[in-house]
Amino acid sequence: MKISGFTIIRNAIQNDYPIVEAITSILPVVDEMLVSVGHSDDDTLSLIRAIPSDKIRIVESEWDMSLRAGGRVLAVETDNALKQISPDTDWAFYIQGDEVVHEKYHQAILDSCERYVDDRRVEALLFDYLHFYGTYDYVGDSRKWYRREIRIIRNENKLENPQISAFRDAQGFRKGRTKLNVKHSGAAVYHYGWVKSPVQMKTKMKNVSRFWNDDKEWEKILKSEDFFDYGEFDSLKLFEGTHPAVMKERIARQTWKVQLDTSKKKFRLKDALLYWFEKKTGRRLFEFRNYRFV
Image (cartoon, rainbow, N blue to C red; front, side):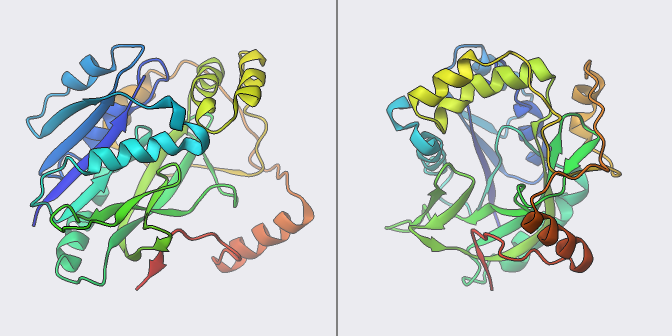
């Protein structure tokens, strides 16, 4: 069985992406790691080249910003990266630049890949998500945060007509409009995209919001203040676990303090009732699922 990791990245330094940690976190699981580096306004390419691993293979790309509406360019670049993994790979492990996998899940991931490699009904493996917010101490626990998403897909490069591709802005994968058949990987992804200083968070938003907004809306964001208000949340809880080991140095470098009151809930009545039901039963009613279990 062979597993290939793949990711895309652009302007990692400028936007403070934990891309080194993201890549490093899955290296023990994969046999190769394809990193597609978009031409950047910073030294992202050197950052990736400095990662000490002979598993990493770097390709360079030029992002077509005319496709930025709805984040479409992210899906295009993800698909292009996927096409460049080794054709004899069985599973393709996708990781985004602000996602990290805890080492405690490595064996579970390998076991799941081995278990389903010959089961052609299984097209992908699903991961739980922890979405950190503000600092490394808080995670979102409301319906606004997606609970699960596909991160390992069956490699179809060996087929004449591969069909699995990135969906919308590459949050997940589908075959055209058809959802993929999945089994759970037994693992979780730690998402750190909302953990930055208030100034750095706003800088990132100004840089990347053009992928999801038209020019007029983007201009409004560019003209907004240079400080992100982390107080605008609906529901959070304190994180009680441990972070991936690869995050140790980054967490130690945190210089900002954000104190958030997890007892405060800011819901409309409908969302409050749905939140209450989920906490009581563990079931999320009317949940959007970009996959289907088999």
